[in-house]
Length: 181
Image 1: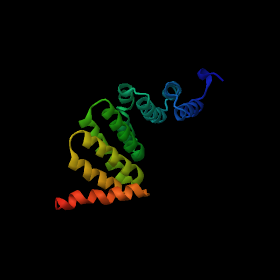
Image 2: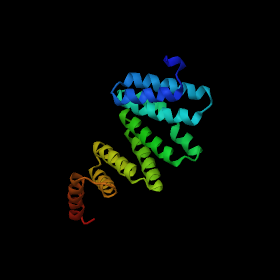
Image 3: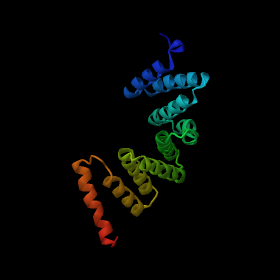
Image 4: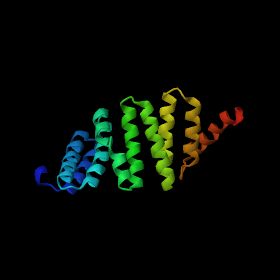
């Protein structure tokens, strides 16, 4: 079967295999073809899902501007469809792409949108992971106390904290105790 006559589902499967094997350019090609086919058949929801997948792969392939362009409108699209889970995920992808492009203020805003969405959904795993990503960004932006507070919140909400994370959680309490918070 050639790529031109492969179904979009088959192209997605090939794209995921390529991504997991670290063959990012091949993954981008398969996802792009699948997205194009979904757009051609009018399946905009699937095309938007693939755009988010492409964003992740493009970031891994060190193509941040292409990743940003791919995911720029997807949070609003999913929100308009009432899909809260994909809206939160799309904001997380948008934040990562903005951060990779050096647009740290926009990235911080998008991380907050994703965090709010995951909290509303009760998705503690993605909530904690996004808080940790925001914390790293805040640290790079020169906001160490914000970063500490965000990281502490992320660790507190982790559903299955490893021993290292539990230790870090205890250590992070000390600066705030010293500050009287």
